[in-house]
Amino acid sequence: MTSLQFDTGAEPSAPIDMLEHYFSSHNWAFERDGDEEIVTTVKGSWSDYELRALWREEDRVLQFIALTGINATAARGEAGTRANLFESLALINEQLWIGHFEHWSADGAILFRHAVLLDGPDEPALSMTQAHALVDAAIDECERYYPAFQFVLWGGKSPRDALVAAMVETEGEA
Image (tube, rainbow, N blue to C red; front, side, top):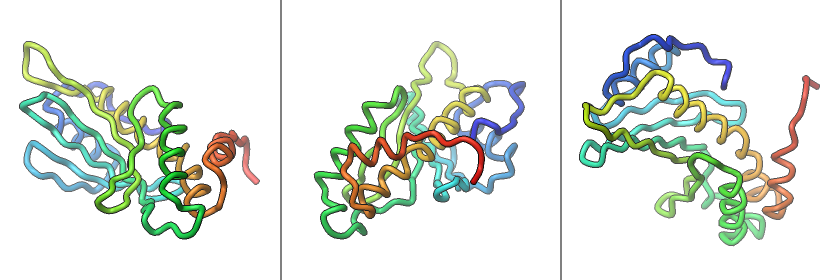
């Protein structure tokens, strides 16, 4: 997703406003809930990712979530055991510098989440470059590790083997 083009000249603005501007600049349909939340869906190589940003004014934190479309509770048999899932999450999260993957126990969703603190003496603002970094990191990590989750949950691979298989970099096209 790093090939996306966007206007870096936009003035920093309120976090949800800037994400709306960013989503609009990519012609992504979105839904907005006031100044606190915005949601869009982006087509990736493996899945459509639901991107959700939540602004917490009192904490001055923008939480960014990418739902992968993977539901761990739908996995069957030994390959889909909770132990394998949690070992996979731990091994994958060790590889990340920003954000983490997690399993929401309420509905079985696998998601990527990270946050940015926008604290300072002025009104909190997000730049277009920061918006791009938030979105790009979430999509890139989902694209990179989606196969590892699939290998573990449905392919019968061990968490370590799944991670190794998912990390193979391919060049060119078949």
